Amino acid sequence: MNAKNASAKKSASQAVVTFVDTPNKRSFEFPIIKGTIGPDVIDVRKLYAETGYFTYDPGYTSTGSCESQITYIDGDEGILLYRGYPIEDLAEHSTFMDVCYLLLYGELPTQEQHAKFEHDITYHTMLNEQINYFFRGFRRDSHPMAIMCGVVGALSAFYHDSTDITNPRHRMVASYRLIAKMPTIAAMAYKYSQGQPFIYPRNDLGFSENFLHMMFATPCETYDINPVLSQAMRRIFILHADHEQNASTSTVRLAGSSGANPYACIAAGIASLWGPAHGGANEAVLNMLGEIGSTNRIKEYVDKAKDPKDAFRLMGFGHRVYKSYDPRAKVLQAECHKVLKELGITDEPLLDLAMELEQIALSEPYFIEKKLYPNVDFYSGIILRAMGVPTSMFTALFALARTVGWVAQWNEMIEDPTQKIGRPRQLFTGEPERKYVPLDRRK
Ligand code: CMC
Image 1 (cartoon, helix red, strand yellow):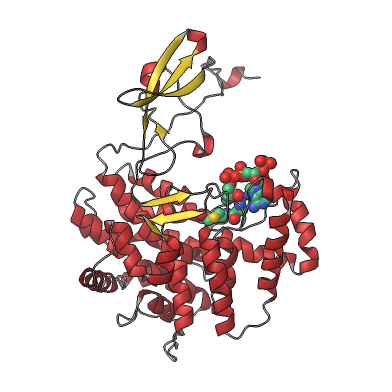
Image 2 (cartoon, helix red, strand yellow):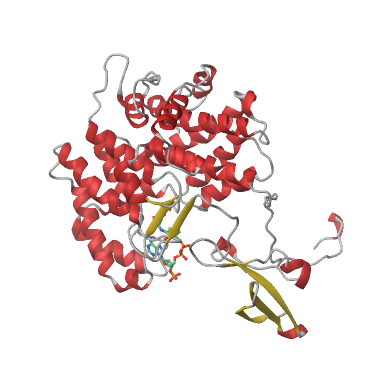
């Protein structure tokens, strides 16, 4: 089979692409669908029924899996919009609650809506007390992401009153619970690893402040919240809140497409996020900087990254969609300097190393040609480390911030009248049907 010559043409009514199946001397037209911005898409939903062909696109590099109105990325220009608002403006001016409301409901809240939303989220921050015992089943040295996967999945066993996914009210209650309880779960995972008692949420604090409190207060001592640090935490949360159809969001959508329980779907998203090619990169960046150790070893590591025979990659560099500087990394680079200044850290070898590595990599033809720029994970780890967050917690923080994106996308999917169970097809290259050989006759 050899189909070629796909060409776009415009008819009076609808733009179509003509697909010419040369071996079979047939041609077919497929509609082009236009979005508000971004590349148009070829609607191939009837491709198999009409032509007998599937498309083949491992890694979905050319495949739109859904229609969405939530987040838009222009990877060439380095633009990221949540519901049309540039990420830089939201990071500068919005509260995290503002952004959560925007992602869930499509508009920035009025003052009244903001106050009610913040109140509603705040009053869902506590966990069912029984979950404390669930935590105690984990080893103390468990990775926080392993605990997050387990505990979030287990929420489906605790909250039975909001699992009718066809009921918008149930969906919102589950969404609010997830946004509200994720910081509590993440902070508990940290406390558990430290052998410290869990710190309950405080409803008089904002979202970021409360998280810092649950992480760093103890029953013996309150934690004085530094506004520069809570500001940085707020920005980290906003920058990580959504990122269209990335691996973990697509996992949440795929899990949810079967009608699965919302908590189980988010646990699936957490599992996908954990990988070092995705959210796990923030932890991997710090480990890599530690391994490089000093600026005079940068060249050695850049050479390793360039070597096609070496699997090593510069962590925090490159992105499937961004082929220019990740706009989130720009915001975080500036934030990094503010945090270190506030904490009086004038000499942070890892920051010096990161900045020099960035300069060297950005001037290397290999990175220029492949359009590999620093991504969001490159600077976030240095900020978190300066705040006292251990490296193993970095991806858990990403997960807690991304939860709002996951639930917004999950709700959008369920409300989409064209939604079907996700079920990709394959190019089969294994054995065709063959005759069964009984055990005693096998050679
Ligand atoms: N260091 C060295 N080479 C790289 C890197 C890197 N960080 N990233 C990509 N390349 C090379 C890669 O070897 C390939 O070369 P070639 O064409 O010669 O085979 C080319 O660039 C294209 O890479 P790819 O793997 O085909 O691109 P992708 O879109 O499938 O992967 C990525 C994107 C993010 C997984 C990849 O760039 C990577 O592994 N980066 C390091 C991990 C990282 O920082 N991940 C965080 C992503 S941002 C946070 C998030 O949204 O999850």
